[in-house]
Image (cartoon, rainbow, N blue to C red):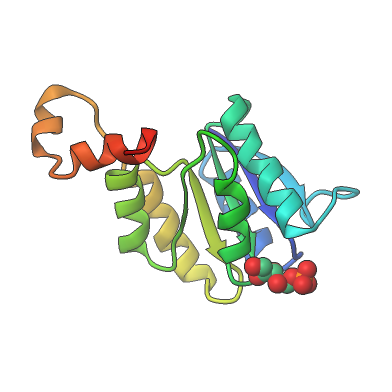
Length: 151
Ligand SMILES: O=C(CO)[C@H](O)[C@H](O)COP(=O)(O)O
């Protein structure tokens, strides 16, 4: 999968994120402090990564800032983007399963490297299924559609 990653800070966990995604076989595009010469401001680099998703040059994105809040706010301003700030694996699983989130927002402050791997496991394991049988099992399917299009 092609994944855009942004961070406003060149922190070890942000570098670990890029390495982990590449180890998992993803094609990673970098923005902000992870990309030499790019604008590292959180509003700018988070939006750039989100735009990659909206424009289809990346399937998903991971946007990072110290708290994760600014990155998620900036990403969510891009039409078609559903960014979810996840601080644990359960939330990451639910964001994919129930919200069809396409951008993962992370806090550089709160996310340790072991927690990062747990969140990524849940994020990539928690696919929304669209087939009929699974749709019957998805309790929140109407809410899922409302979340995609607006109610
Ligand atoms: O968490 C953040 C925004 O939500 C930023 O990472 C934090 O505010 C630091 O940014 P700056 O150094 O540009 O002020």
